[in-house]
Length: 343
Image (cartoon, rainbow, N blue to C red; front, side, top):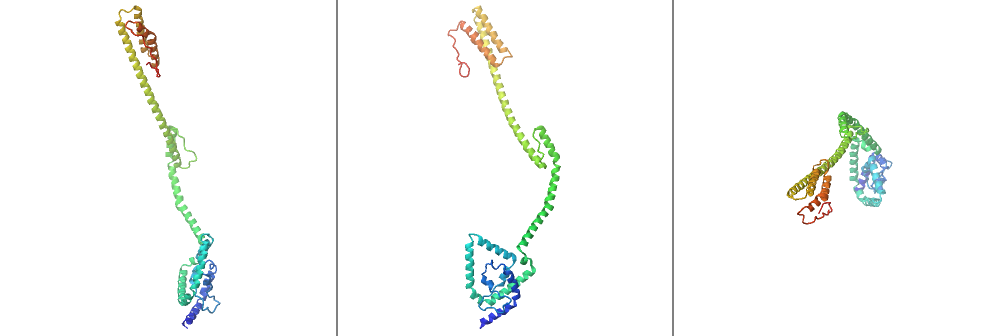
């Protein structure tokens, strides 16, 4: 008997909220197919034309249907459902989960019938809370996804336009003014580099001064690198020339020293042989004079002096020395080695 009285109270309260529930059910029709709750839950909502509620049906939480009928939430649920159904990895688990949720809901219907008064009361308070929120913030309950997307796009364009007008354009204008003030300095640097370093000028398509400075710095760097390489080569050539000059000077000094020693020895030899024949004496004087002339001639190079001295020694001086008294052994022939010197 108490169970029947409680069910009658549920019927009376439900009729009192028929008008309000009908408005929510109209919104719920568009998303009922994609909503995760079982279809039996939506079908048990009483319509305004019904005057009695079946005592064996479970009560419905109309607040869930109301929330699901909000355009943004309905679109989100629909997108998630379509994505899960179309993905090959989630389509099968999603279908299984829907079947299990429907079965579980049917098994809990007896408990829902017993708790119908409490469920109805909670649903009423939840709907009143939604009414309060909707009265203060009506836009989220009525806005469509297309409107939100358009609003976001317009806001983004407006923000970009504001940034361009208030930030980018003034900053660019100021940068151009500063860039123009550096033009005389860059012109002077460029003319100096072209005149003194023979670098190429910046191309005419360089609109801003920093571009000209960048091109000029590259050209000057390359030119300085080339000059540094040339300087190294010049230094090496100078060192080689100095070495050759020092070697030639040393060789010339040694030639003069040896020649002077030879002339001195010949003079001593001439003074020591007083009994030498007149012909040998005059021939020895001629050798001394020839050697002295070769050494003292300024126009001859070192190689020419060496060549003439060798010829004079081989063809005149050595035969004369062999004929003089005291030459006990025949002269040894000097064979040149691989370096061209006598062994």
